[in-house]
Length: 358
Image 1 (tube, rainbow, N blue to C red):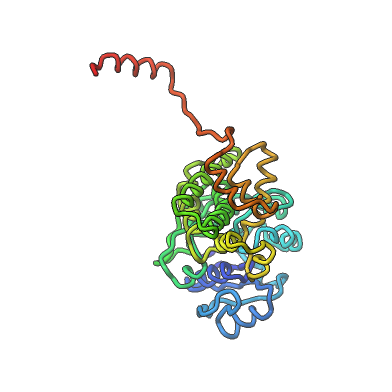
Image 2: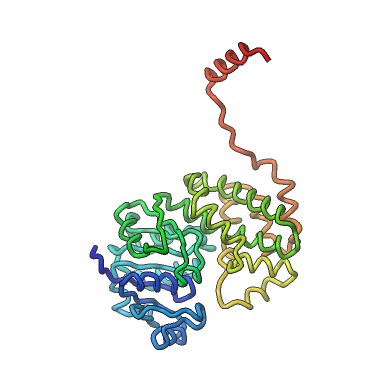
Protein backbone atom coordinates (compact mmCIF):
# COMPACT_ATOMS: atom_id res chain seq x y z
CA UNK A 1 0.00 0.00 0.00
CA UNK A 2 1.39 3.39 -0.95
CA UNK A 3 2.53 5.80 1.75
CA UNK A 4 0.20 8.45 0.32
CA UNK A 5 -2.87 6.20 0.58
CA UNK A 6 -6.29 7.84 0.76
CA UNK A 7 -7.70 7.97 4.28
CA UNK A 8 -11.43 8.18 5.02
CA UNK A 9 -12.77 8.73 8.54
CA UNK A 10 -16.33 7.76 9.49
CA UNK A 11 -17.67 10.05 12.21
CA UNK A 12 -17.25 13.78 12.76
CA UNK A 13 -17.55 13.92 16.54
CA UNK A 14 -14.71 15.12 18.75
CA UNK A 15 -12.78 11.82 18.55
CA UNK A 16 -13.13 11.36 14.80
CA UNK A 17 -12.19 14.99 14.15
CA UNK A 18 -9.12 14.82 16.38
CA UNK A 19 -7.83 11.63 14.71
CA UNK A 20 -8.55 12.95 11.21
CA UNK A 21 -6.77 16.19 12.05
CA UNK A 22 -3.78 14.29 13.48
CA UNK A 23 -3.38 12.30 10.27
CA UNK A 24 -3.87 15.46 8.17
CA UNK A 25 -1.15 17.21 10.18
CA UNK A 26 1.09 14.26 9.35
CA UNK A 27 0.88 15.42 5.70
CA UNK A 28 -1.93 13.11 4.55
CA UNK A 29 -5.04 14.08 2.63
CA UNK A 30 -8.00 13.03 4.77
CA UNK A 31 -11.74 12.98 4.13
CA UNK A 32 -14.13 12.80 7.08
CA UNK A 33 -17.80 11.89 6.87
CA UNK A 34 -19.92 14.14 9.09
CA UNK A 35 -23.62 13.52 9.68
CA UNK A 36 -24.49 17.14 10.52
CA UNK A 37 -24.50 19.59 7.60
CA UNK A 38 -23.60 22.48 9.91
CA UNK A 39 -20.51 20.63 11.17
CA UNK A 40 -19.49 19.78 7.62
CA UNK A 41 -19.70 23.45 6.64
CA UNK A 42 -17.90 24.53 9.81
CA UNK A 43 -14.93 22.25 9.08
CA UNK A 44 -14.64 23.16 5.41
CA UNK A 45 -15.25 26.90 5.68
CA UNK A 46 -13.99 27.85 9.14
CA UNK A 47 -11.40 25.08 9.71
CA UNK A 48 -13.10 24.26 13.02
CA UNK A 49 -15.60 21.74 14.35
CA UNK A 50 -17.67 24.25 16.31
CA UNK A 51 -20.17 21.71 17.65
CA UNK A 52 -17.92 18.92 18.93
CA UNK A 53 -14.41 20.39 19.13
CA UNK A 54 -14.68 24.19 19.36
CA UNK A 55 -11.64 26.41 19.62
CA UNK A 56 -9.23 24.15 17.73
CA UNK A 57 -7.92 25.08 14.28
CA UNK A 58 -8.01 22.16 11.85
CA UNK A 59 -5.58 21.24 9.09
CA UNK A 60 -6.12 22.37 5.51
CA UNK A 61 -5.51 18.73 4.49
CA UNK A 62 -8.84 17.78 6.05
CA UNK A 63 -12.04 17.78 3.96
CA UNK A 64 -15.49 17.11 5.40
CA UNK A 65 -18.09 15.10 3.45
CA UNK A 66 -21.80 15.07 4.24
CA UNK A 67 -22.80 12.23 1.87
CA UNK A 68 -21.69 8.87 3.28
CA UNK A 69 -22.01 7.30 -0.19
CA UNK A 70 -19.70 9.87 -1.79
CA UNK A 71 -17.61 7.96 -4.34
CA UNK A 72 -14.34 9.73 -3.56
CA UNK A 73 -14.87 9.15 0.15
CA UNK A 74 -15.48 5.41 -0.26
CA UNK A 75 -12.67 4.98 -2.79
CA UNK A 76 -10.11 4.71 -0.03
CA UNK A 77 -7.20 2.49 0.97
CA UNK A 78 -7.73 3.07 4.68
CA UNK A 79 -11.02 3.44 6.57
CA UNK A 80 -11.14 4.70 10.15
CA UNK A 81 -14.36 4.20 12.12
CA UNK A 82 -15.09 6.46 15.09
CA UNK A 83 -18.89 6.29 15.08
CA UNK A 84 -20.76 5.02 18.18
CA UNK A 85 -20.78 1.23 18.42
CA UNK A 86 -24.56 0.86 18.15
CA UNK A 87 -24.52 2.54 14.70
CA UNK A 88 -21.65 0.56 13.16
CA UNK A 89 -23.63 -2.46 11.97
CA UNK A 90 -26.47 -0.41 10.36
CA UNK A 91 -23.96 1.77 8.51
CA UNK A 92 -21.92 -1.21 7.32
CA UNK A 93 -25.08 -2.93 6.05
CA UNK A 94 -26.02 0.27 4.23
CA UNK A 95 -22.59 0.33 2.53
CA UNK A 96 -22.11 -3.44 2.32
CA UNK A 97 -21.21 -3.59 -1.38
CA UNK A 98 -19.29 -0.31 -1.41
CA UNK A 99 -16.67 -0.92 1.27
CA UNK A 100 -13.40 -2.05 -0.32
CA UNK A 101 -12.65 -5.39 1.37
CA UNK A 102 -8.95 -5.02 0.45
CA UNK A 103 -8.59 -1.78 2.39
CA UNK A 104 -7.28 -1.56 5.93
CA UNK A 105 -10.02 -0.90 8.48
CA UNK A 106 -9.04 0.84 11.71
CA UNK A 107 -11.64 0.77 14.44
CA UNK A 108 -11.37 3.57 17.00
CA UNK A 109 -14.73 2.99 18.72
CA UNK A 110 -15.26 1.11 21.99
CA UNK A 111 -18.29 -0.97 22.88
CA UNK A 112 -20.44 -4.08 22.44
CA UNK A 113 -23.35 -4.24 20.01
CA UNK A 114 -26.42 -4.37 22.23
CA UNK A 115 -28.48 -6.50 19.80
CA UNK A 116 -25.98 -9.12 18.63
CA UNK A 117 -23.71 -8.97 21.73
CA UNK A 118 -20.72 -8.85 19.40
CA UNK A 119 -17.50 -6.89 19.74
CA UNK A 120 -16.60 -4.55 16.90
CA UNK A 121 -14.12 -6.82 15.13
CA UNK A 122 -16.85 -9.48 15.00
CA UNK A 123 -19.33 -6.98 13.53
CA UNK A 124 -16.95 -6.18 10.67
CA UNK A 125 -16.29 -9.86 9.97
CA UNK A 126 -20.01 -10.60 9.82
CA UNK A 127 -21.10 -7.63 7.71
CA UNK A 128 -18.23 -6.77 5.37
CA UNK A 129 -16.47 -10.15 5.30
CA UNK A 130 -13.03 -8.58 5.54
CA UNK A 131 -9.74 -10.40 5.96
CA UNK A 132 -9.01 -10.18 9.69
CA UNK A 133 -5.40 -9.35 8.79
CA UNK A 134 -6.73 -6.07 7.38
CA UNK A 135 -8.48 -5.20 10.63
CA UNK A 136 -6.83 -2.95 13.22
CA UNK A 137 -8.25 -1.57 16.47
CA UNK A 138 -7.04 1.57 18.22
CA UNK A 139 -7.39 2.12 21.95
CA UNK A 140 -5.64 3.58 24.98
CA UNK A 141 -5.73 6.65 27.23
CA UNK A 142 -6.39 9.53 24.87
CA UNK A 143 -8.92 12.36 25.11
CA UNK A 144 -9.84 14.06 21.83
CA UNK A 145 -8.90 17.52 23.13
CA UNK A 146 -5.47 16.31 24.20
CA UNK A 147 -4.79 14.76 20.79
CA UNK A 148 -5.95 17.81 18.82
CA UNK A 149 -3.92 20.04 21.16
CA UNK A 150 -0.83 17.94 20.34
CA UNK A 151 -0.18 17.02 23.96
CA UNK A 152 2.04 13.97 24.61
CA UNK A 153 -0.12 10.85 24.25
CA UNK A 154 0.40 7.10 23.87
CA UNK A 155 -2.08 4.61 22.37
CA UNK A 156 -2.27 0.95 21.42
CA UNK A 157 -2.89 -0.43 17.94
CA UNK A 158 -3.80 -4.10 17.70
CA UNK A 159 -3.99 -6.41 14.70
CA UNK A 160 -3.28 -9.99 13.65
CA UNK A 161 -1.02 -8.59 10.92
CA UNK A 162 2.30 -6.88 11.60
CA UNK A 163 2.23 -5.18 8.19
CA UNK A 164 -1.24 -3.71 8.86
CA UNK A 165 0.02 -2.54 12.25
CA UNK A 166 3.01 -0.74 10.76
CA UNK A 167 1.00 0.91 8.00
CA UNK A 168 -1.57 2.08 10.54
CA UNK A 169 1.01 3.28 13.06
CA UNK A 170 2.63 5.41 10.36
CA UNK A 171 -0.63 7.37 10.05
CA UNK A 172 -0.69 8.44 13.69
CA UNK A 173 2.84 8.53 15.05
CA UNK A 174 4.68 11.81 15.39
CA UNK A 175 6.73 13.62 18.04
CA UNK A 176 3.66 13.97 20.29
CA UNK A 177 1.96 10.58 19.86
CA UNK A 178 3.53 7.19 20.45
CA UNK A 179 1.93 3.99 19.16
CA UNK A 180 2.46 0.67 20.94
CA UNK A 181 1.70 -2.55 19.05
CA UNK A 182 -0.37 -5.55 20.13
CA UNK A 183 -1.77 -8.69 18.49
CA UNK A 184 -4.51 -9.20 21.12
CA UNK A 185 -7.44 -7.68 19.23
CA UNK A 186 -10.20 -9.14 21.41
CA UNK A 187 -8.37 -8.21 24.63
CA UNK A 188 -7.94 -4.60 23.52
CA UNK A 189 -11.63 -4.39 22.55
CA UNK A 190 -12.87 -5.96 25.80
CA UNK A 191 -10.75 -3.55 27.84
CA UNK A 192 -11.86 -0.53 25.80
CA UNK A 193 -15.54 -1.41 26.00
CA UNK A 194 -15.80 -2.34 29.67
CA UNK A 195 -13.63 0.45 31.08
CA UNK A 196 -16.46 2.80 30.04
CA UNK A 197 -18.88 0.88 32.25
CA UNK A 198 -16.48 1.02 35.17
CA UNK A 199 -16.01 4.76 34.61
CA UNK A 200 -19.76 5.32 35.01
CA UNK A 201 -19.57 3.53 38.35
CA UNK A 202 -16.53 5.60 39.37
CA UNK A 203 -18.47 8.75 38.54
CA UNK A 204 -21.43 7.58 40.62
CA UNK A 205 -19.11 7.00 43.57
CA UNK A 206 -17.75 10.55 43.18
CA UNK A 207 -21.26 11.94 42.81
CA UNK A 208 -22.64 10.43 46.01
CA UNK A 209 -19.63 11.70 47.93
CA UNK A 210 -17.75 8.50 48.68
CA UNK A 211 -14.02 8.60 49.40
CA UNK A 212 -11.06 8.19 47.06
CA UNK A 213 -10.30 4.98 48.95
CA UNK A 214 -13.75 3.63 48.06
CA UNK A 215 -13.26 4.62 44.44
CA UNK A 216 -9.86 2.92 44.26
CA UNK A 217 -11.29 -0.28 45.70
CA UNK A 218 -14.19 -0.12 43.26
CA UNK A 219 -11.93 0.32 40.22
CA UNK A 220 -9.54 -2.42 41.30
CA UNK A 221 -12.27 -4.99 41.93
CA UNK A 222 -14.02 -4.04 38.68
CA UNK A 223 -10.78 -4.57 36.78
CA UNK A 224 -10.51 -8.02 38.37
CA UNK A 225 -14.00 -8.88 37.07
CA UNK A 226 -13.24 -7.90 33.47
CA UNK A 227 -9.91 -9.74 33.55
CA UNK A 228 -11.72 -12.89 34.68
CA UNK A 229 -14.38 -12.41 31.99
CA UNK A 230 -11.78 -11.86 29.28
CA UNK A 231 -10.37 -15.36 29.82
CA UNK A 232 -13.63 -16.80 28.48
CA UNK A 233 -13.04 -15.06 25.14
CA UNK A 234 -9.35 -15.94 24.94
CA UNK A 235 -7.84 -12.53 25.69
CA UNK A 236 -4.33 -12.10 27.07
CA UNK A 237 -4.26 -11.04 30.71
CA UNK A 238 -1.21 -8.83 30.09
CA UNK A 239 -3.33 -6.61 27.81
CA UNK A 240 -5.28 -5.40 30.83
CA UNK A 241 -2.11 -4.15 32.49
CA UNK A 242 -1.10 -2.00 29.51
CA UNK A 243 -2.25 1.23 27.88
CA UNK A 244 -5.49 -0.21 26.51
CA UNK A 245 -6.26 -1.75 29.90
CA UNK A 246 -5.35 -0.03 33.15
CA UNK A 247 -4.07 3.05 31.28
CA UNK A 248 -7.38 3.81 29.60
CA UNK A 249 -9.27 2.76 32.72
CA UNK A 250 -7.41 5.29 34.88
CA UNK A 251 -7.97 8.15 32.46
CA UNK A 252 -11.66 7.41 31.99
CA UNK A 253 -12.37 6.97 35.70
CA UNK A 254 -10.46 10.03 36.89
CA UNK A 255 -10.41 12.45 33.95
CA UNK A 256 -12.82 15.40 34.07
CA UNK A 257 -13.21 15.18 30.28
CA UNK A 258 -14.57 11.62 30.53
CA UNK A 259 -18.14 11.42 29.22
CA UNK A 260 -18.79 8.14 31.00
CA UNK A 261 -17.41 9.30 34.34
CA UNK A 262 -19.40 12.55 34.07
CA UNK A 263 -22.60 10.64 33.26
CA UNK A 264 -22.12 8.60 36.43
CA UNK A 265 -21.27 11.70 38.45
CA UNK A 266 -24.57 13.38 37.54
CA UNK A 267 -26.49 10.21 38.41
CA UNK A 268 -24.69 10.11 41.75
CA UNK A 269 -25.82 13.70 42.32
CA UNK A 270 -29.42 12.59 41.92
CA UNK A 271 -30.19 13.37 38.27
CA UNK A 272 -32.44 10.99 36.35
CA UNK A 273 -30.69 8.95 33.67
CA UNK A 274 -33.00 10.18 30.89
CA UNK A 275 -32.26 13.81 31.79
CA UNK A 276 -28.52 13.14 31.82
CA UNK A 277 -28.60 11.49 28.39
CA UNK A 278 -30.60 14.36 26.90
CA UNK A 279 -28.25 17.00 28.32
CA UNK A 280 -25.27 15.98 26.15
CA UNK A 281 -24.63 16.20 22.40
CA UNK A 282 -22.25 13.23 22.62
CA UNK A 283 -22.76 9.58 23.53
CA UNK A 284 -21.43 7.88 26.65
CA UNK A 285 -20.80 4.40 25.24
CA UNK A 286 -20.72 2.77 28.68
CA UNK A 287 -24.48 3.24 29.11
CA UNK A 288 -25.25 0.83 26.24
CA UNK A 289 -22.26 -1.41 26.91
CA UNK A 290 -23.43 -2.10 30.48
CA UNK A 291 -26.66 -3.64 29.17
CA UNK A 292 -24.86 -5.62 26.47
CA UNK A 293 -22.31 -6.92 28.98
CA UNK A 294 -24.98 -8.17 31.41
CA UNK A 295 -26.65 -10.07 28.57
CA UNK A 296 -23.30 -11.46 27.43
CA UNK A 297 -22.25 -12.51 30.94
CA UNK A 298 -25.54 -14.39 31.38
CA UNK A 299 -24.89 -16.16 28.10
CA UNK A 300 -21.58 -17.42 29.48
CA UNK A 301 -23.00 -17.95 33.00
CA UNK A 302 -20.43 -15.52 34.37
CA UNK A 303 -21.16 -13.47 37.47
CA UNK A 304 -19.75 -9.95 37.82
CA UNK A 305 -21.47 -8.35 40.83
CA UNK A 306 -19.87 -4.93 40.54
CA UNK A 307 -20.45 -4.44 36.81
CA UNK A 308 -23.96 -5.87 37.19
CA UNK A 309 -24.69 -3.35 39.94
CA UNK A 310 -23.80 -0.49 37.55
CA UNK A 311 -26.35 -1.89 35.10
CA UNK A 312 -28.86 -2.01 37.96
CA UNK A 313 -28.38 1.69 38.71
CA UNK A 314 -28.68 2.64 35.02
CA UNK A 315 -31.62 0.44 34.00
CA UNK A 316 -33.36 -0.94 37.11
CA UNK A 317 -33.51 2.09 39.42
CA UNK A 318 -31.20 0.37 41.92
CA UNK A 319 -29.67 2.61 44.58
CA UNK A 320 -26.09 3.79 43.87
CA UNK A 321 -25.22 2.47 47.35
CA UNK A 322 -25.40 -1.01 45.81
CA UNK A 323 -22.06 -0.36 44.11
CA UNK A 324 -20.26 -0.02 47.41
CA UNK A 325 -22.09 -3.02 48.90
CA UNK A 326 -20.80 -5.26 46.10
CA UNK A 327 -17.21 -4.21 46.76
CA UNK A 328 -17.56 -5.46 50.34
CA UNK A 329 -19.82 -8.44 49.61
CA UNK A 330 -18.78 -10.00 46.27
CA UNK A 331 -20.47 -13.15 45.02
CA UNK A 332 -18.69 -16.23 46.39
CA UNK A 333 -18.25 -17.55 42.84
CA UNK A 334 -15.80 -14.75 42.03
CA UNK A 335 -12.52 -16.18 43.32
CA UNK A 336 -8.88 -15.52 42.61
CA UNK A 337 -7.20 -17.92 40.22
CA UNK A 338 -4.91 -20.23 42.17
CA UNK A 339 -1.96 -21.89 40.49
CA UNK A 340 -1.21 -25.22 42.18
CA UNK A 341 2.49 -26.13 42.15
CA UNK A 342 3.69 -29.47 40.88
CA UNK A 343 3.75 -32.10 43.71
CA UNK A 344 7.48 -32.69 43.21
CA UNK A 345 8.16 -28.99 43.79
CA UNK A 346 6.14 -29.11 47.01
CA UNK A 347 8.09 -32.17 48.18
CA UNK A 348 11.48 -30.52 47.60
CA UNK A 349 10.32 -27.29 49.23
CA UNK A 350 9.08 -29.07 52.37
CA UNK A 351 12.29 -31.09 52.54
CA UNK A 352 14.42 -27.94 52.28
CA UNK A 353 12.42 -26.21 55.01
CA UNK A 354 12.85 -29.20 57.30
CA UNK A 355 16.61 -28.63 57.22
CA UNK A 356 16.27 -25.05 58.44
CA UNK A 357 16.48 -24.51 62.21
CA UNK A 358 14.03 -21.77 63.22
